[in-house]
Amino acid sequence: IREDHNRTIPIGVITATDRDSNINNQMKYSLDDQTIPFYLTSNGELKLNSSVDREQRTIYEFNAIVMDVNESLISSSVPVIVHITDINDNAPRWISPQVNHTHLAINKDLIPLGSIIGHLQAEDSDE
View 1 (cartoon, rainbow, N blue to C red):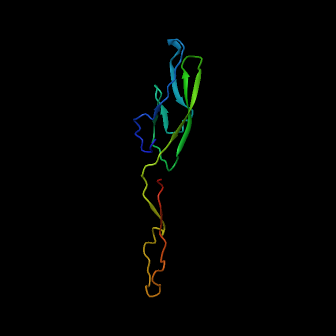
View 2: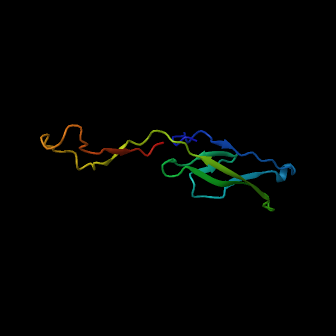
């Protein structure tokens, strides 16, 4: 998913079936990791419950669990992998010169024509 994915739109749907009679075929969906920014709705939709940032984490791996809600508590799980894709949400920043060094004084009589007088370097966290 893109790191700016709309939290109201499902990322995907986990589908499970239970061949028991109608009394025992009620199911509950959950995830095995409560620290991730995802949750499963009562009908198996995988959604975001908070924002994701590709610069902080590029992939999430967890298990989706479906459980029988009767007293036997029979369950099954499936691995889920969510890759976070980048958007251009970070401004480039100067590495060299540092922000507090914004002026350079040069005596043109002391520097030969064509000389390198400085080195500029910037980086951007986005891909």
